[in-house]
Image (cartoon, rainbow, N blue to C red; front, side):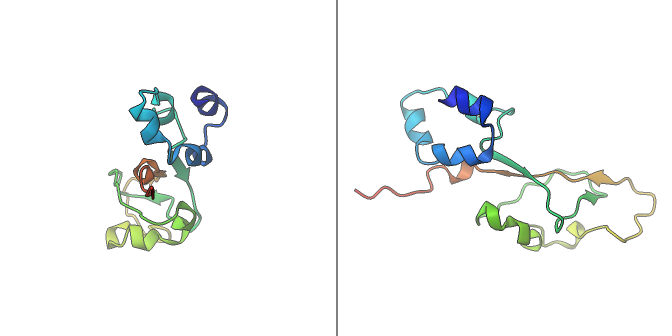
Length: 119
C-alpha cells in the first residue's frame, strides 16, 4: 500500500491515511521511507497564494511554526511572518538588490501522534 500511494498518489491528501497509523507502523518495523523521503509529497505541501509575497531580496531560508489548519494558512501570512523584514517588496524600490523567488511549504509530520486514544 505504501509503495502504491507514494508512487501514484504522491499528494498531501494521502497523509490523512497515515496520520494515526504511522507510529503503529513504525513500532511494527514497517518501512516508511517512501512516505517521508525527499521525493515524497505526502507529508510536505508546497503552496503559492496570491496574498503571500512571491519575491524578496533576502535569500535566507526561514522556518516558522504554524499550528492551525493547512486550509486556513492562506489568511495568516502576517501571523507567521510578523516582522517588518518580511513585508512584501511589491511596489517598493529595491535599489539594485537581487530579487529571489520565495518557495513556501508546510511539513505535516508534526501532526503525527497529535490525536488521543481513549480506552
